[in-house]
Image (cartoon, rainbow, N blue to C red; front, side, top):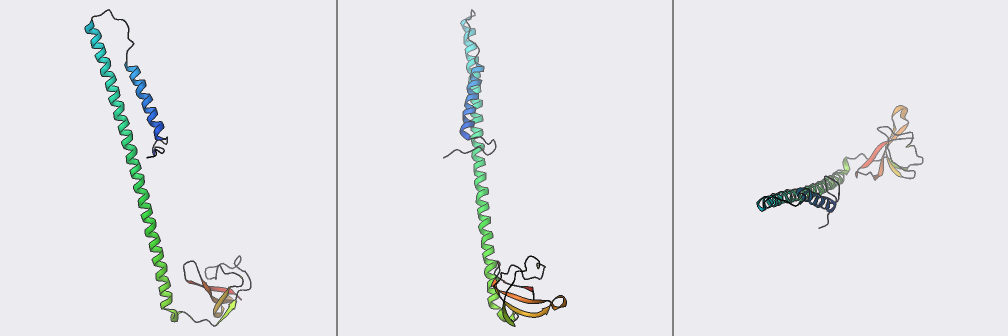
Length: 183
């Protein structure tokens, strides 16, 4: 198991563990009173030693509990991240399946109903690029010079300056592109 950065604190987890151990040792040092020669009875020194041992034990128990809580929380966060990652991959796979099904249905509809499509009058070749000046909502967009298009209707639009054409190449969505193109 490789320890990566902690999801909340951003530090590597081994660095956090070392910092916790350092703080435990500092707490143990602070809990020990300085040993001085005592003129009191042995009962008094025994009580002091027992108090010291209880302090050290309490500090060790508290720090061990804190370390276990940090470790448990870290494992919980790793589990949550793994679950979220898995859900995202599942959603992405479902989205890709839906996109593929929609494209297949669209292709099927186009294959099943070719007779309902308007018949071409003739075919023509695009001889000039007008995409920079002609890009309205009914314009045939993204055609290249030299591409073959099917002419569906002549003299359309304002003053009859356009022809309605269908591109013979399918667009990104799999459907043929239709629109106006200047004469």
